Structures are given as structure tokens and as C-alpha cells.
Length: 363
Image 1 (cartoon, rainbow, N blue to C red):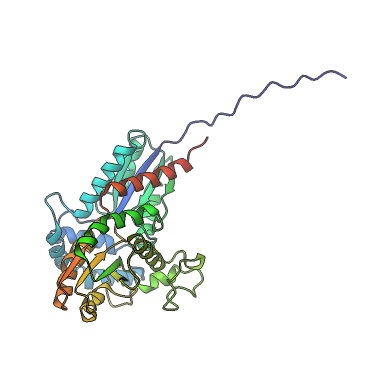
Image 2 (tube, rainbow, N blue to C red):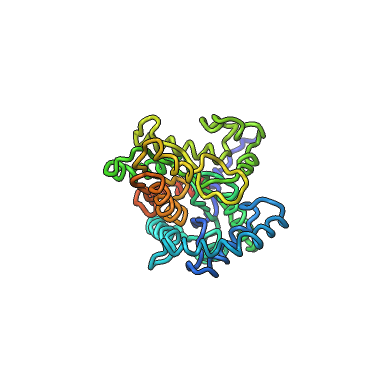
């Protein structure tokens, strides 16, 4: 029988060309300027989104063109003017500074672009920019800590729609909702701690952006847990893992623990409701009106659903909320700034991005 020599070792398989990742940071958006016309254009785009106003298209158009656009742009324009800066919209300014700081850590190896879901810079333009700089794998980072169809959901829908225009559709990866990320908790506490120590509030509000109750029920796979009892958000479990309200409560608990807030010294509330349909409770504006009657004279407000200061933090809480609290008998309201471009927040964003980049690397 002939002797068979062992086959020579086969050459190691090549991993092949590695995809080049690019990073797309996405926030909500802002009007181009605080004028009525620009605000109207922005609101038209924002409120035409079926993930924001999730009713029949005919009803949404009726609501938008008969009841919202004829009146709200003028009111919203005044609100925007009260917070507008020489550099522009605070949301855009802070988001741009964050993107620039992240780019300093990642570029030139990983290009970084900023987009807004509504308005400019657009998602389409940002994706085109990343592709022009050689990115064929896009790490999308929706800048919303908690998951909601009207925020993260609509960003991802838009990104996929715009990315699919290309003949060679890029691979899309997503930084998931990061409400449990220790860096988020730690940095909100780091921003707020020295302010609380000097302000010495009687009570702390954790005010999150509100949603219609129907949005919460639609996100409940069981159809039986969300909003079914007063304690439905006391714990975050598998059954309510998609619940925005439960994620907000979890965020608030984590920040409160980081700050060592005393039991009973913190309340979770929800702001920015629109229309007459029920929104998730308790409402921030009602809480601000009621707290002075409970002996609260000094209140501090965190807004942990926003990672950049914007109309909802600076005007709704910092101006109108403060006026409302004082009118009800309170002495002073402290708005704790958002994370904006705080160095620790930049580090957290970079770390989360790098984690997603590593997942797409073939060894």
C-alpha cells in the first residue's frame, strides 16, 4: 500500500477587506431660525411623521392643517426666540459640539457625521457624506437614552430608507437605547451634584418627555402589562422591556442612587404633552403647581430624556416651569443642564460607538 504523505498545511484563510465604519449621530432637530415661517416648516415635517402622530393619515392631516399649523407656529416661534443664541439653536449647537468632540477621538480612521431627524443637517446628506469618506458600515447612534417609536424608531426607519437609495447598500449597525449605561447615569449625576450641593433643593423632579398612553400600550407585546396598574413601572423586566415609561423610571432610579438622594425626595414626571388625548402621568406642569402646597420652596429639575439642552429643557422647564412654580408659591427652580458636550459624556459616546464598531470587525 503506498505511503501517503500528509498534505501541506493550507494557507490561512484571509479575512478579506475589512469594512470601514462611519458614525452617524442623530438628534431630533430644530427650525432653521426662530421665525414663524421656519417654525411652521419644521412643525409640518415633525408632526407629519406617522410615528409621532400615529392616527389615520386623513385625521393627522386634518389635525395638522386645521388645528396646529394655523396657530402653534406663532406660539412656538416666541418660545424659540426666548432661547435662541448668536450661534443658533441650542440643540443644534450642543449636538454639533458633541459630534466635533467625538470626531476628535475617532477620526480620521472612523469618519463622524451629525444629522437631525427633522430639518438640517439631514440624514440623507450625512449618509452621503459618510459614504463619500469611504464608510461602508454605518454605526447609527440615535441620541435618545430611552426607546420610543416616535424617537429612536423614526430615526432608524429614516436611516434605512435613505441608506437603501445606494446601489451598494451599507451595512447598518445601531447603538441600542442606553438608559442603563453607567456612563449616562454617572454623567447626569456629575453635572447635577455640585449644583444640588449649592442650591440645596427641597425636592428633585426627574422630568422626561411625555408620550400618549396609546404609544405605551402599542409597545407592550403582552397587551396586558403596560399602564395596567399603578406599579407597572416599578421594575423593568422582560415583559415590559420595550416600555418607554418603565425605562424612564429605571433611568431616574439609577441617577437618584448615584446622587444618594433620600427616599421620597425625588419624583418622576412627564412633560410636553400635546392635545387632549391621555398622556403618560404624572404631568410635570401639574407637579410644579402642586409642590409649593406641599411645602416645597426650592425644586431642582433634571431632564434625563434629553442629552442636549433644547426648547423642552431651556424654555419649557427653565422659563415657563420656573414661572409656574413661583406663581404657585415656590421660591426658586433650578434647571440642571443636560449632558451637552460634557467631557465625560463625550467619553461615554465614544466608548459605545467603539463597542459597536468592534462587533463588525472580522478577526
